[in-house]
Length: 391
Image (cartoon, rainbow, N blue to C red; front, top):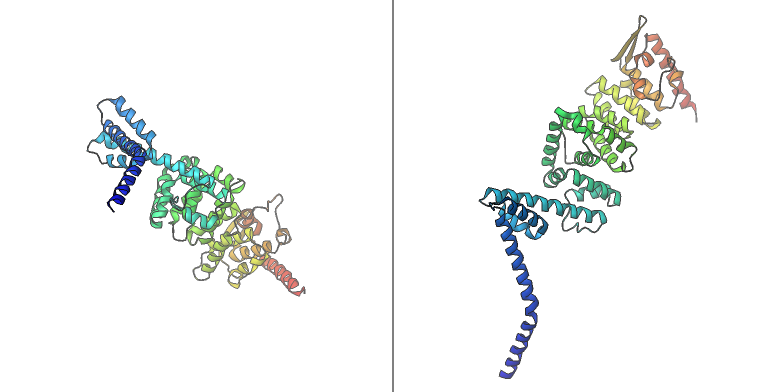
């Protein structure tokens, strides 16, 4: 028994001796690295500027291995040490974030272990394809703070986006000129979330950014327009009240059929809370973006009989008046793919491709008398009767 114990002890000692050189080397290396980082942090508070600068550069070069020690140094009693430690921490975070973004783009990221803020939401809505990842990286680079806010708390994201809009108001033009697709896409992404509700003023500022030349081009002809357009369409479809007016305008500008959803909501609310100007614009939106299947939205009895005046124009002593029922009638004519000139006396060289040139023009769709209006309404009724007669 004693012999066995001696043999076992010798074997264990042999294993320890065999393992000791590398283990001791690793421990020594780690100890030396910690000692080196500690020395460099101490040098951040050196009286000599060159020493402080050199220590800062070396710590930034060491990177993540120095992160924990630098985090502690950020609370150092010496103000210079604190300031430089925080600066280096920022550099390390930025470098690590960029490294992760590059890995993310290549599809080699460890996303489940270290997810980028907002990615799980984004992927759920827009997929995991290369184009989606590329846009998400642009968003991360342009406004990581906003995406972190969403990850932490949707209300915080709402407040952050609101502050951005308020800050941009005094210098809106110069701020817009600096907006990138990544910045606007990040804001659109936040605004499109079901659990984020933006004030009208914030939404208006965001819509204004979409009309910036660079962003408008990206949303209409750019090779990466699909996802930002989907974001914008989601926002438009959710809009209501005052925000719906701008949403409908945006939908017509970018040809987003979701504008019909917002317009339908406006017409529905008009039944209980009349607003002729909003209903006027909603009818124009449906005519611009819809087709014959949307005729029931504009042919309601309430709209076709609403005599509220929404426009007026005077020419050569003659006054032309647009009533809301006239707008509903014209919307029905447009949706049924008929020729406006078959119903109205269209002035020479009058452009008819732009809905606003039709629906906001009293000289074109306004009437100088009820007799003229009745004649056009009778012609429309005859057309409808003929349609119903077709088997």
